Length: 420
Ligand code: ATP
Ligand code: MG
Image (cartoon, rainbow, N blue to C red; front, side, top):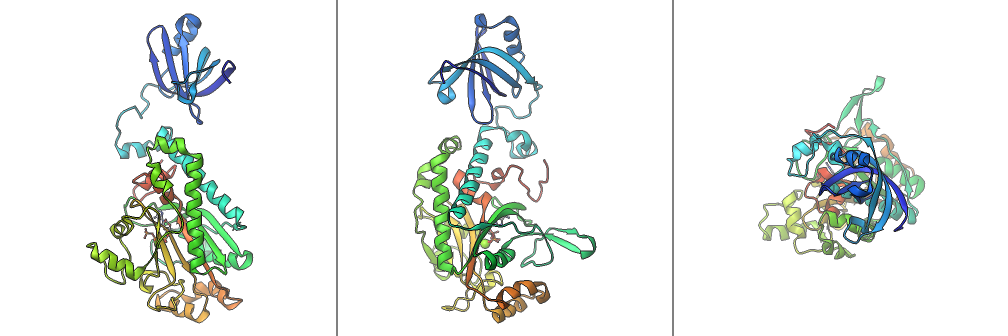
């Protein structure tokens, strides 16, 4: 490569000049390039053009590639010709100094260009591809479930919109129920798409729009499902460590913590989790869901994710299968990421008994007629099956080590943020 002539197009990141020799650091989306101009070796017009450059000017540079160990990437370009493709006024909003988070989010369309954001988005892409590859290798079929749905909510917090003569349509909070129907057709499937929750919570871990991966597996019980979950997470971590080291370095991620992720992950029964938490000073009572602080307390001292299994019925959704060993509880698991990143997966074995499911729908006060098609799956050839939902942004946040998930979506949607 050294010695070759090259033309590179990109944007100005940094400019420096001593009057006789000048440097441009530019980025082209794949990396950084240092460009060197020697005044005595370029035309007066080229030198003049250099002096007009500003941060984020889009330009095309042509010159000779040279080996330079001190330059980013190990090469630099000895400039021969420079062309401005798109000028950039000097008021570029994001300067090399501290900006507040609201300012940065208001300028998200430009903030995306910064090295940290580029690193996060590349890691997000790697994780998404790793997930597709993981399921493809195991013969799972990728299916897309509807985003516009009729009333089939298990919870509050639905976004809604008018839908012609059909009344109100709701934006999907989950594709699971459709995934179950598809599992009876295809065996093992997974979905990978946006889900919507009109949650008024303003935590570090909630977006109103987030991507969820929801596998649904025919003939898997809750233990089979947990084995799949840990294999999937270990695969994702390994893949990012293999292919995205430079990005993890940009983020100053403690890579050793990721390297310690090993299967199997510990399984803690919910009732035991409550006892552990109480001895650690939590106010949690049996029957309640774990709060964010409880989740952090529970993973303390663990280097891998941790499963909390078999929650009380009242804390979980109607479709989870009753635990034969303790009918107060259901066969389910939450997977908690280490280092305090909290729940990243919620999974369960599904209730496959028609009458028990009807009873649970009634108990929850849900409209039975809305679930007619879902009950059909138990009427016509019911089958043991399990599934789970992995939150993509929360997984990215954990692997990148970002304290808030808002940086883990290109254009995050939160209660007070719909633009840009
Ligand atoms: P939490 O209790 O943390 O609000 P949840 O139990 O309501 O989450 P599930 O319905 O189990 O969430 O969804 C499965 C996964 O989807 C979660 O484990 C999480 O990774 C992700 N997830 C859920 N809600 C959100 C959200 N508002 N923003 C981003 N990711 C989310
Ligand atoms: Mg959950």
